[in-house]
Amino acid sequence: MISATQQIICPRCKQDYVIKVVVKIDGEVMQICPECDACWKYEDHILFETFNTFQNYARKNTISSTWDQVQVIEESFPQPKERMI
Ligand SMILES: [Zn+2]
Image (cartoon, rainbow, N blue to C red; front, side, top):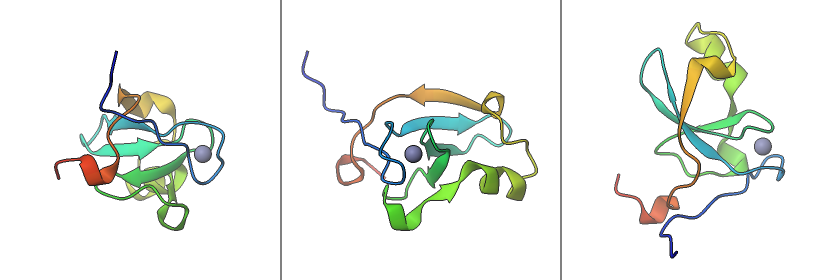
């Protein structure tokens, strides 16, 4: 099967693919590395220079930084240049 989507290796740890999740409490879509918890906003390009940590994000939004706060919605998705923003 030909897929238009492409998985992106986490540029921080290079150990896992970045996945797309929605934060349950506010519905914000984030891109997260399950391995090292690096995260990016949906509209951000996934670059080492721009990563935040999920712990940081959770603290700012006063939620606990656990995986039950988010729901995985896509395990692969188009590169930013191919996405409709
Ligand atoms: Zn990572």
